[in-house]
Image 1 (cartoon, rainbow, N blue to C red):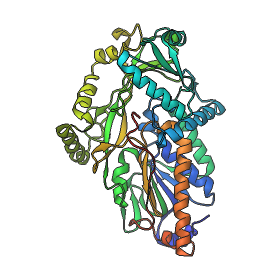
Image 2: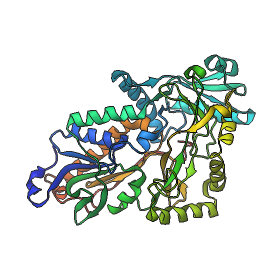
Image 3: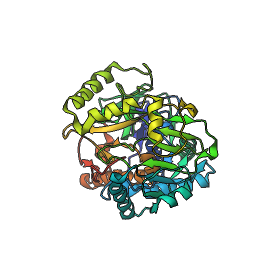
Image 4: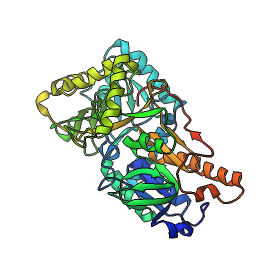
Length: 448
């Protein structure tokens, strides 16, 4: 273990940890597992502000395990989606967790979409994804209700899982490894060399920020993420009461590659239920799930002026995006969009909205664009996962290994530079210093 024994400073602080992970979603839990596996003698503590883990994005996502053909080859998403899909599917089978290996069809509405369909096929092949370009007749053999123009893409490895069941299993793994999972414990600030939480002050060797919607704010406390800000988007799915056997496969439209979202699609859950969506509605505060739920005036002051600026400047065609997404609050409109993908989608059978989820989309304030790839920053004192939007759930296993390789590299480099065992880490996390690292990977690679 590369850390000095934390017991040497216990006399001056009630709460201590070698690694403190902030955030109990899939990235936070997997980073905690990585820390404990690589440094078994370390005290690894994960704090989560809610009463249980995965109450936000990780527990509310669609549950789709993506195959990896949407992303350009130079991106981190392309690098980890195929492997993440394989490993998470295997994990679900090994643990007897619900999984629906239904596959996915991407359909073209008309001739104008065939060029983009071909581009997605080529990306998939470049990324090593099992993907097939098939005729409309072949597509109907897979899913008889499908609508497509001339041809479609078929992804047999796309699957659906129960995200809550996956998170429960991962949390049990973390606890079995010896990770301390502390819920009802919110991060407050980094002050005077300590991490202040609602449970008290912590003296910490290394901080890992995987706080999702709050990752940008926490990063700034440590001197990172200065040119980034989170813009939250609300996702809603409308559930159909058709029987489980009504559809055989997920059906997606050809996406607009200028847009970071995949458009309204027909998705099968792990249990086979049918849902259509999602929306991607700009939120007014970070946890703007409904009405004034978890209203934050501080968030409102940060986010609304930023969104008004996007509207005024119409960056990345924000006006059109916002208008189109707000229209999806109408059940009639979202059913109309889904009806372009398949026959027999009836408004009378699509009545119930599912629980909303919120996408923590990172925005580059300096270059005025959405950050399309995963993004992280860190040094030998702290590490910040700034952008872990879809398909981060699919990618979580290899992606967290990759990030922890960077962390270990930073810590070992600090040891070599100092000439002795992490003297700089004997001072608890506070100011930014030492070696500084940012994520690699492409950008502008199309939808998430």
